[in-house]
Image 1 (cartoon, rainbow, N blue to C red):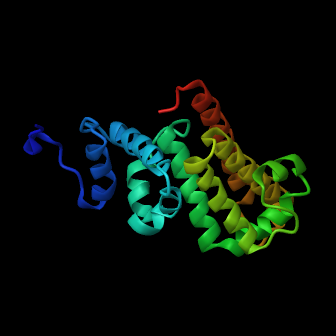
Image 2: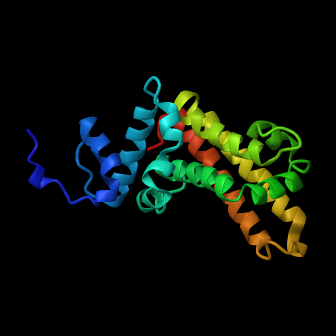
Image 3: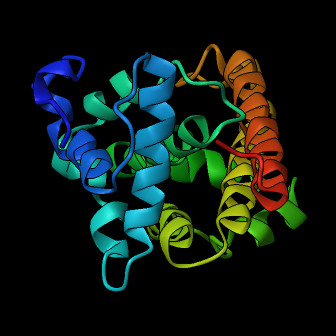
Length: 204
């Protein structure tokens, strides 16, 4: 029987997530990196249980995006927690600023037609379409092929990057659009690398 007093202190806001680690029988993480990896792996495992996928797609709505940020924000981008953080951040962005995402998507989709198809948003996207696409990406993590979900998210970020570059310095709503486009491109590259590692069984 595990001595609870020997477990490292975990902030209360992590309770829902770290309790899942305990329930799964995992060892108590002893570092931030271990905690990030352990929560990500348990979430994917739990979310793939029958009927559980939708609940985990909306995880940030329940525990708060700041909780996920505290766990995963500093994780290696080419890691399971790093990849999940990018996907949840994408979903939150589409929900909180859907009009801006749609504006950027429309500016970039004709410049990256292949990526647009992979992302699965559809032609003449509106706010509902981009929000549904972000939900579909996370649904793929829990109910489909995780590597494909990561590649869809990468394609989404590449279309957004193309849109930012197209609008360029003349975009009154995003003076730092070029820098943000480069950042979106780096996220896309990390997600593709994470997909390759998942297929190889080396993503943790």
